[in-house]
Amino acid sequence: MSATPASEAHPAPEVLRAPLVLEFPFTRSLGPVQSAFLTGLRERTVLGVRTTGGRVLVPPVEYDPETAEEIRDLVEVGTAGTVTTWAWNPQPRRGQPLATPFAWVLVRLDGADTALLHALDAPGPDAVRTGMRVRVRWAAEHAGAITDIACFEPCEDGGTGRAADPGTDESTATEPPAHSGEFADPVTGIVAPARLDYTYTPGRAQARFINALAERRTTGERCPSCRKVYVPPRGACPTCGIATSEQVEVGPRGTVTTYCIVNIKAKNLDIEVPYVYAHIALDGAGLALHGRIGGIPYDQVRMGLRVEPVWTESGRHPDHYRPTGEPDADYDTYKELL
Image 1 (tube, rainbow, N blue to C red):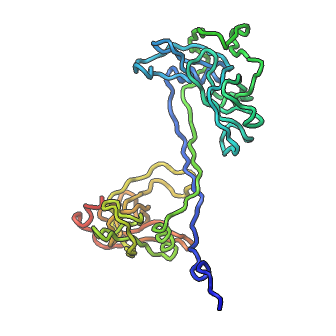
Image 2: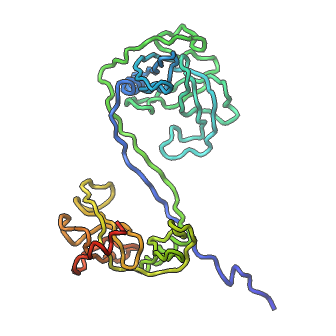
Image 3: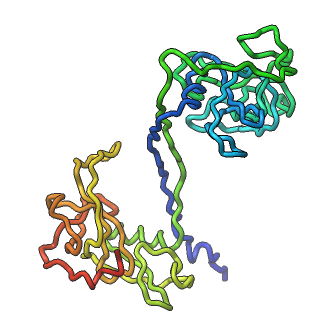
C-alpha cells in the first residue's frame, strides 16, 4: 500500500498576488537657493551654498543644518569630483538615470564639502572604487532639473571641472568663487513625479476577505477578547493584540459615518466629479471601511445615510454604494465608528 503525500492530499491554497502602482505628481515652488541651483544646472553650472561656518554644501540648502540660520551665499563648484562611497545597481528600474547596470555614487565635487548622489556610468563594479575621479555628463536636453546631469563618468586624467576657470586644478582648489545666482528666465517651480511599483501579497486574513468579495460577500474577523469584528480583517485585533480567526459575514447594508466630496478628477479613473467618498459601517462590523457613494446627488449625502453595495457584472468588489431608502440611522448607533 502506498501513502498519498500530504501535499497532494491537502494542496496549498493559491497565493494571491497583484501588481500595484502608487503614483502622483508632486508640485512645489522654489525659493531663491533651489531656484538658482536648478537654473544653474540648466546652464551647465553647478552651484553650492556656503554656510556661516565656511562649509560649501552641494546640493545647496536654504538653512544652515548646524545653526538653522538662513543662508544664501552661493558659490560655483566644479563639475568634476571624487567618489566618496558607492553601490552597484545590477538591475536598473523604470525612471532611473541609466537603462544599463550602473553604480550609485556619492560624489564630492571640487570645491564642495558634501557629496551629491547620482549615477555613475561604468562597465562593471570592478571599474568603480572609492576615491576615483569622475565628472558630470550633461544631458542632451536641459529643463532645469537634477536630470540635467545625465550621470557621472570616470575621468582618470584627474579632470578639473569648473568651466569658469579651466586652468585651475579643482582637486586642490579651496575657495570656490562666489556666484550671484542670477540667470535669465529662472526656474521657479518643479513637478516631481512620485511612483512606487510593487507586488502586493495579502496574508491569510485578507486573502479570505478578497476571496469572499469574489462571491459578493463581505467578511470580517471577530476578536476573541473584545468581540469587535474588524472589516477588512487584519489577522489580529489592533486593540487587544490577539490573533483573530473567527469568520463573520457582515452587511451587506451599512451606514455612512463620515464622508468627503471629491472635486479633482483622478488619472485613469472614469468617474465624473464631484463625487462622494465615505466611511461606511457595515451592519455587524466594528470598523468602518471606505467606498464611493452613488445613486444620489453628492450634496444630498449625509451622516447616517443607509446604503447598500452595487456590484458590476464582473467586479470583484462593490463598484459603489447607493441609498437603501431606509430611514437614517440614529447617531448613537454609529458614533463609535466615526
